[in-house]
Length: 313
Length: 275
Image 1 (tube, helix red, strand yellow):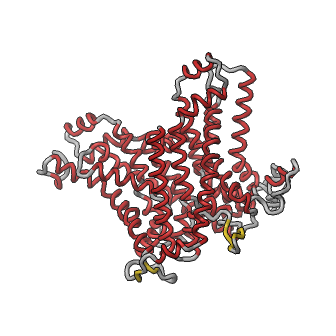
Image 2: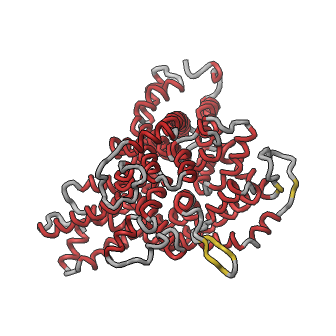
Image 3: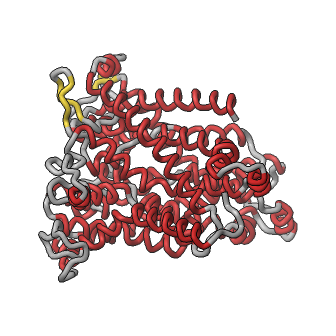
């Protein structure tokens, strides 16, 4: 009666193994070929010379040891990209947390129609970063862009000439601002559910003790949503290490700044450099080596964060 | 912070704050839509709402610039990928939730660990594999590499673990085979999570621009985002057309979100809250 002819006559445990791996097969095959194998193959590419004129790069490549990594570590553009990634993270993590938390606090009030606002804040998170970037490019345009015009009405003309994305000082903050508004809905939901789990009696007790609204926020809300804040720091760092689409759509890594005689992009993050080395320059071995450094950085960040989490929460 | 009753004044202040925040967050999309309806070449006209709104931009990107074709490609890619990724994750989630088998927990930990790897890591070797398989410029190149959705597997397993095993046992006693148990008991009881994962994977593939860009270089296979990126670099100055293309690109996801937002919000934040 039970199972297929294939499993007939087997013990229950044996049969379970066969069934389980049969059900798992499609998932595991795809995982092995397109996720697990690439991690190792990427290392192979990073250690070999990959011809720039051919994409048939399976086997038969010249082993060059660590020379891709050596070149990478001597590459100013690479170290600059790490610096820009840190800068990006330093901007986006605190501002993302602040805006998510502010939206969650606004929503935590029991008001009629509050779910409509919740949906409005969350919606941009599911939409395409490429489109969001293209729209912001229009908004940030010099001379006639809507933001420049709005600022001109209050007398700010500093951005009129080159636009927000055309100036090295403002390009990264502008990219980050666009991204924070798009992504804030995600953190907002996490904070909102954490805030709603805080017992109302804590606030009432504090109120009786004469605590002001700000004190209640500092002493009750903030400490109790700390796990969410740590989570936001971790995913913020990882997404900074992966940042690509926003830069592709808005600045292509630019605009250039002159650093000691070298032209370096003000939004040249490492994720974009990997893409550039691969897609624009066809330096596949180099791109693979760089992606390994990204992986190493991700692991370091995760381990450090874990330590913090264990110590603090 | 949420006191039960609030005075009228503070309530008005809260609504004002919420409305202002919504205006800021949604402003890019508002601007995209109004610009798409402006006369060609009038993207920077000072008025907010176009004085003579036109559908011309939409007509032109859809017919002259091939967006109708891109749209069909996106639908094909996102639908087939969402269907298969959800199917594979459902099958795998079931056995991780309900079966004992060799190396189960180790394997699950190994799969989860892969979530930490930066996405950029996979791009170069996946490209090499696709090229070696001779799959460049095919739908399957866009779909197949992303069919093992580990996050989806995690969602499935978490949900299916809450389904009582007695129900499965009862079906087995009635003589149902493994496949029947899965199909007639597990799947019907997991409809909410299956729907959630289908929507999430559809959204992921609809927006999976970088990968689609890498494996296609012929126009007839462009998806909407790839077409939009190509259009952007070729016609930097045609802003009204770009905005029309952008509208077409986000419309399906915005619509799905409008009708099924609960699934989106719960699905996307579920892993985070549990983890």
